[in-house]
Length: 313
View 1 (spheres, rainbow, N blue to C red):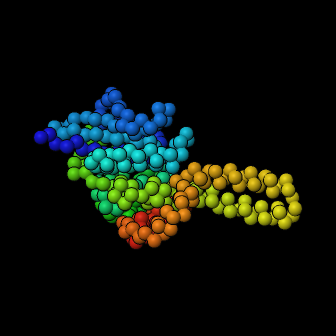
View 2: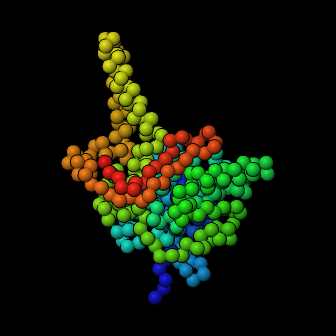
View 3: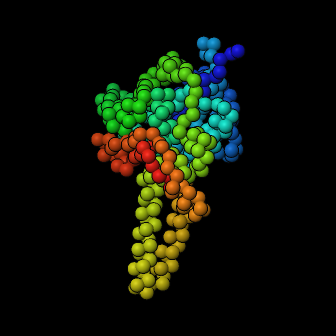
């Protein structure tokens, strides 16, 4: 019986080098197979199959976060559907690659979503891959090295301590790419998001990854602005300014619609469901809290907590 294929998912921000990394592993001329063509007019999950040293590999190219044309919640929903379908079919990941441009001076809040998807238990199968080293000029190498030190010591530290490894894609070559993934040959295992969606029968908006998204700076600011508008409405009514009240109501409705489109759909969950969740305790992995870079451009509120014992609500 031939060995089971090794399935490795590649995730990261849009433009972080995911597809290029896969191309170096597959030979760049592989025709992608649309694993789940959710929408023909948008980017979806793509599978690339290649045989290497008597072993079949399947590399999964996922939609990138921080996409100007798609929201992170839509991307999370797409990836989650693919992961759920694979797990229900008995297919598990042997490894997960997260690509990060070494030229980036900050880490996106979507890294918290990634941590929430993986969980602590499978951290040993995670490779945090810094890319585009070959594009750094000599005078920029010192800055790049400092960024790596900050990543490993702060933001990536909890994941690394749990077993993840940082790898440098220093040379844009097939040899370098294979060197990075060569030890990801273990038996596949379910990641946290798959367990939550399938084994614990959660809705997407109840999952750790979705809570991480809800905690991101963008959505928090939306909520804070919504609360500010409510306060201004009270002031406008007190001043008996109907035109101002009308404008604020329109803005309130716009913000409400935007909030309802996020995975914070928990706000729309039936009351019975919310009550059930309030009393349902789930044992989640140990806390993983990202810290701020020394570089002040890094978002101060980029964090996600993966539990201990937590109420999901």
